[in-house]
Image 1 (cartoon, rainbow, N blue to C red):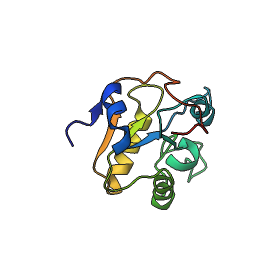
Image 2 (image 1 turned 90 degrees about the vertical axis):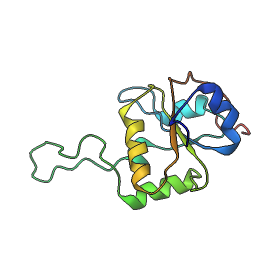
Image 3 (image 1 turned 60 degrees about the vertical axis):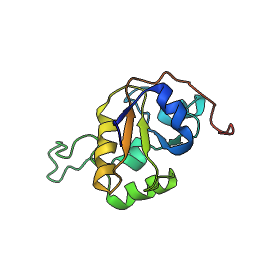
Image 4 (image 1 turned 120 degrees about the horizontal axis):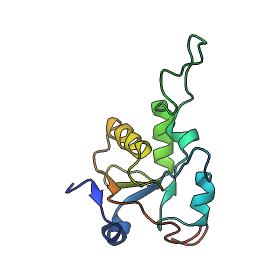
Length: 140
């Protein structure tokens, strides 16, 4: 891997040889699936933050505190299933993007992915402007 950061132009040039994950999510904002349906990077697979990239926060003592954070990492089997569904393969680099630029969520996916054995994970240098491509359902 050269650099974990890719420009929008580099991403466009490498679409045929990478797996692209759209992980858009905003607390109180537009739901990620709706944003994905409105437009996404060609060939990108949507991965849902709440259902696939995070476990439920835990409150083991009933105190109302969430010691694992708002979006703790999911169980390994849930994460691996989501990555398989999204088309992740060991022999292809992965580009992960959201709609906020360099966010903690994306960093969490990179960290989780790295701990699950995939080494070539990249992120856009800057925020991608959406919609930047076809709506969901269009041929990619």
